[in-house]
Length: 193
Image (cartoon, rainbow, N blue to C red):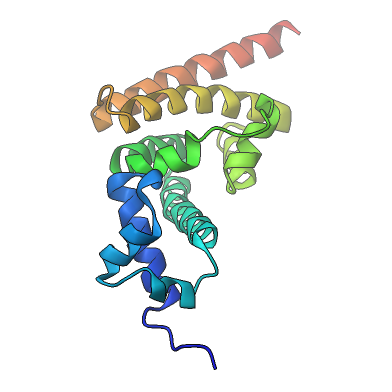
């Protein structure tokens, strides 16, 4: 009969997530996790087979935290702008989780058209918000989404690495300015075609 688990799966994941939030993903070791739980590392392995399984669970937990930000953005009147703002706020409020999800090197380098669906489970939902908010075709909506993601990712990276900070008003103004410019440019291209 296997030993009774001292900690639940959820308790272990929460403790591991808190280590990553404060110290980064590299700090997540069995020893650090045992210390965080006030125990040795042994009870972790009555619930998880190995640290890779713990790490994967932490990545999934971080994605859930991020998804809450996305949903908050999608619920705003201007959903697409809301998502961009929330993406940046996620980097400000959860810099280590942002770095884990969006600043980790990939083994294969995807091209731009594949990167967003690869890194963001809410891609289709966000793309639909672009189409409905601005009455764009799928191709135009993807183009707008890609441009604005590159821009907001730059701001978010600056925030997550503490290179600089922006106020909420500054973030809103920057996103609005770029969004209006891109939409205007797309409209002019359509008129001249």
